[in-house]
Length: 235
Image 1 (cartoon, rainbow, N blue to C red):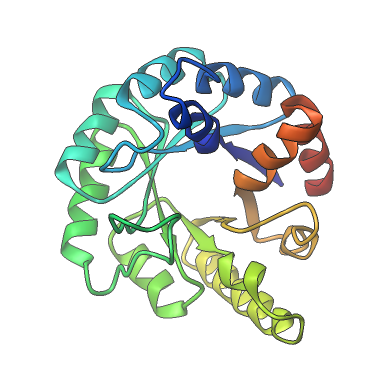
Image 2 (cartoon, rainbow, N blue to C red):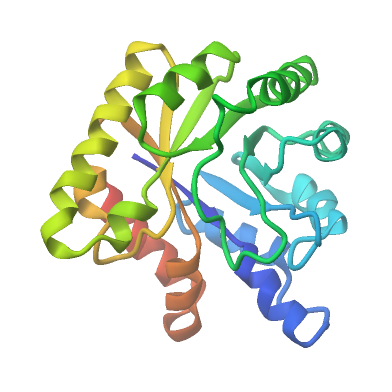
C-alpha cells in the first residue's frame, strides 16, 4: 500500500509565526526520501496554511505525485491546471472548520462536481473525490467520471471501540464497490500509527493519505523517522 504524506501542518507551523520556515518544499523532499510515494496539500479558500507560492515550489521539487486537495470551484480548478498537479482531490470545505469534517456530497452536487472533474481531466490531471463510506456516494462519484475515490476513514478513527468493526466494515464495502466500478480506491483522515493497520488490511485500498499524525510524530523524532515508521506499517 502506498503512503502519501499530507504536509499541510508543516505550513501551519510556519504560519503560526508568519515566518519563512519550516518550508513545505523541504518537508516534501524529506518525506519522499523516507519512502513516501506522494505529497498531498490542501489549498483552502482562506489560504490558512498552504499558499499558491507553495504549490509552485512543490511542483518543482516533488518527484513522486503532487496531490492537491481543494473545493470543486472554478477558481481552484484553474489554479490546479496552471500548477500542473498530478492529481486533485475534490473535498468539501467550510470556512471555520478546523479540518475537513466529512466527505463531499456528490449526489447533491453532481453537476458542479462533474464540471470540475471534466476540466481537470482536460488539463491532464487525475481526479479523485473525498467521500464518506456510502455506496450511493461511490456510485455517484463513478457517474461523474472521476478516476479515484478517497474513502473518509475519520468515522472509523474516532469511533468508540465497540463501533470500530462496524465502521471498518463500511469502509471495506465502499472499497469493494469502488473496485467493482473500476475506480482506484484510496483512504485517509484521522489515521495514526495506532489505528492504521486494520485499514491496511483492506487490500482494495491502494493508497493512504496521512498528515497530522506524521507531522506530530516528526516534532518528536524527526520527519525522516516519522515517515519511515508509517511506511513500515503499510507494508
